[in-house]
Amino acid sequence: MINKNFLWGTATASYQCEGGWNEGGRVPSLWDVYLHENNLENGNDASDHYHKYKEDIRLMKEGGHKAYRFSIAWPRIIINDKGEVNPEGVQFYHNIIDECLKNGIEPFVTLFHWDLPQYLEDKGGWAEREICDAYVEYAKVCFKEYGDKVTYWSTFNEPRYYVFSGYKIGNYPPGIDDTQKTIQASFYMMLANALTVGVFREMKMKGQIGIVHSYAPIFGVDDSLETKIAMRKADNYFNNWILDTAIKGEIPIDMLGMLNEKYDLSFMKEADFEAIKNNTVDFAGLNYYARALIKPYTGGESILRINNKGSEAKGSSKVVVKGWFEQVFDNPDSTYTEWDTEIYPQGLYHGIIRAYEKYKVPIFITENGVAFYEDVPNEKSVDDQGRIHFLNEHINAILNAIDDGAEVLGYFIWSTMDLYSWKNGHEKRYGLVGVDFENNFERKPKASYYWYKKVCESNGTAIERS
Ligand code: NOJ
Image 1 (tube, protein in one colour):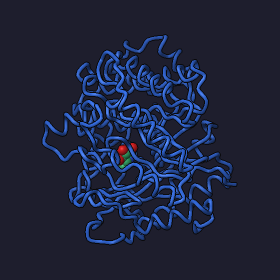
Image 2: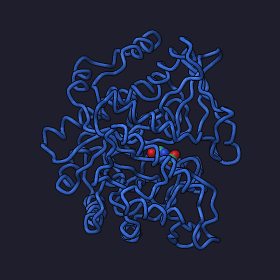
Image 3: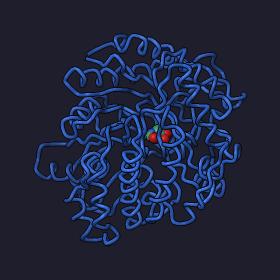
């Protein structure tokens, strides 16, 4: 049965919605510098949430939402490598949190959704051990400031996307292809997660702390042994190095063994493994967009081509991890979004059941949603029936998993309003509320916003079940 306090909400991230990139004492993040230097579409203004947060939170309230998942921008809070705190930045999130509480909305706070201060990137970013201390100090400031008001904390949003895109695929900053650094950054992020959970316990914070993962439940093309072995490697690659590490305190040992054959893992210290073992999270935040359909590796070099831009995207994805597995993107029985993401709600049902059986911690679906090209400027209210259908099918999958015993305590649609989708810019629209980026960022709730209001207010009974 669904919990009566189930958190129905929507989600955003600081860099993707705030704008005000050089206001209120904020210093540049690595995204600002990377996008400006390469002359790419940026989030300087994003959805102007920095100035319109009151309107956005009012819309959440009127839309029946119970919670708002957002992230704190580290470059607004700590403005140099001496750890100097920026009071104006601190105040901004007090304002957001207070506005939420005033409107009966539970703030669900992420500490890191990718906007690393550039002054830390200049020192080597996540690939260097020093970052862990800087992160812990930043987290402490947030706990101290907002701890009395916030119950739900997440340390990181999607370590896999951040690290693999930045250090291996190279399509996100710092934009390199270096497997040794990919491994280091992955490890230091998970270590920083554990150290921060430790501090959270030491400071006797009320509430709970979790991690948010880009969950790709693994499916195989057949039942053969080769496929099963490939699936295990894929599960390590996609999921286990984050979820096993954060929730069980164990980095998958078979994965470490494989990496150790080719790379230098001597930077991992005994005390680090101990910290990871002793400081595990309270809940799993799972972002679900699609499953990963896996077949055995057939040969050739590694290829990691996903999330490609606009018209080139459809049919262009390819993932081969040399010696490990290949991912199938052209399943004839599936439909795919304009950005080549498979639409597969059953994957969410199975993913939740598996995660709950394996980890036995409460689960929040911290992101789920679908992007379309939409003509917001020229429409009064976008009639996004496709999104409504997509969301209905996915919420139905969650409710089925709850009926079958999984403890799912909340659901957040990505995204609250249209926003800046990293390298896909603003044209990839996910919002329940449309944003007219050309006309003073005017908010225009879509049909899905009114539909979701009924879902929230009925605690899910408005969902068509199957
Ligand atoms: C995951 C990320 O958390 C978010 O930043 C991104 O925009 C969405 N997924 C959509 O791709």
